[in-house]
Amino acid sequence: MKNHIARSLKITLILTALCGVVFPLTVFGISQLTMRDQANGKIVEVDGIKYGSTLVAQQFTSYNYLWGRIMLIDADAFYDYFDAPTLFAFPSNIDVTNDAYATLLTERAQMIAVAHPTMAATPIPYDLVTVSGSGMDPDITVPAAEYQIDRIAASRGIDKTVVAEAIKKNTTEKFLGLFGNAYVNVLLVNLTLDGIIA
Image (cartoon, rainbow, N blue to C red; front, top):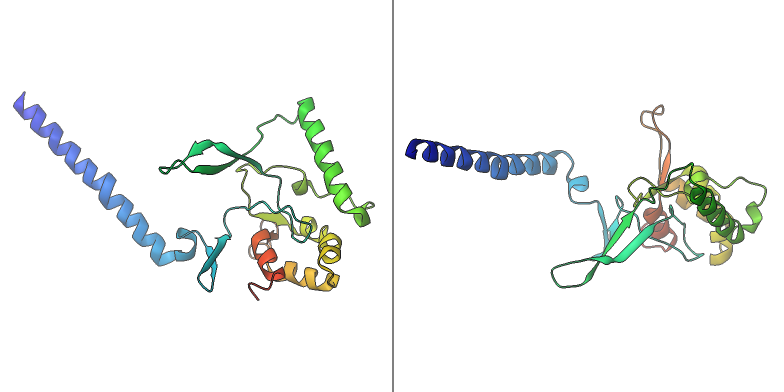
């Protein structure tokens, strides 16, 4: 019996060291060497002020800003160690065959149409009325960004070319020019429009 207990303890200690210390430190070290920005959250910091991560969405609702995908936000379900509410975003998980899904899309499309009267003849891009799988997608498609140019320019009292240039500057093209889709980072466009980043 003593031999079994001693052997079990040894195995437990070895696995704890490997899985709890060696493996995490190895992954941390490799990530810091090969993809430091991504591993540290790609936080946008200017003059000591942190404006957010380019990897996680923020909800912009002002007409002055580029809007991202619809976000379903819950600030009441989770709390941190200091009893402060922790923001939580999630997908709707409503099946596309459910009548409630069609109702949601119709309501969202109406909201987008009201905010963009000059775009009445242009179909609303899908990502302006749908929630992403993660619920916190920081990017939108190029058509979704360009759809909002008139609204942002009118609200800010600036030329549309200024907004278009901010979108173009913060667009990531297809991988190798072939794979995936070009996409626009919402936070970076809005920081550019505010003159926080060049």
